[in-house]
Length: 169
Image (cartoon, rainbow, N blue to C red; front, side, top):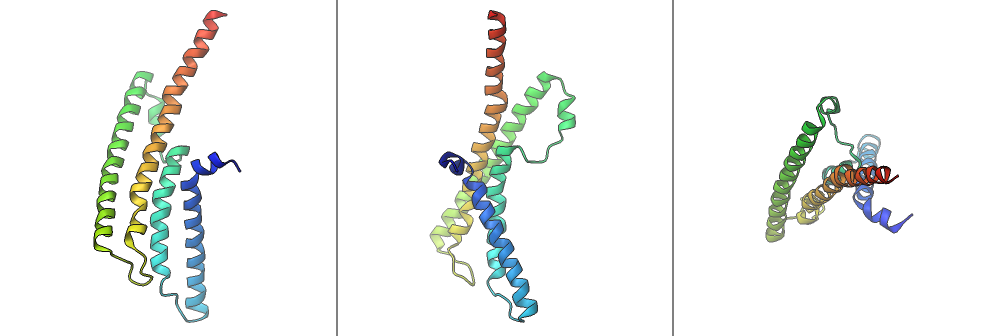
């Protein structure tokens, strides 16, 4: 596989690994609890980390691939000028929320580093677990900016070039 493709999809790969760990730990937890009558004490802790990592890393990939839920039927019936305004407003709102979450995540991360908090059972540093929040926000910001660039800026310049080429012919 191409190195650039791996690097571009690193968040998706890490989310997939977290999902695999989540499934394995959950399955193992069920087996140990009900068949062996010996629950895995740390299973719930790991499951919570995996959910957090899947959510924040998977959201960046969802922005990149346009996989978030959208009500496109309303957008599609709008005139092109209104669509452009709605797209800009949408981008500004999304980026504002992501910047806000980034600052909250960075504050949480610095607090966890300062107080050296660890998890109750496995003693994993909380900064490592909560560090996915700012990382996920940054990947979401990059992905949504790149998606808007491809859809609206590069697409427009490609259309302009095609129109200019038709005029020259």
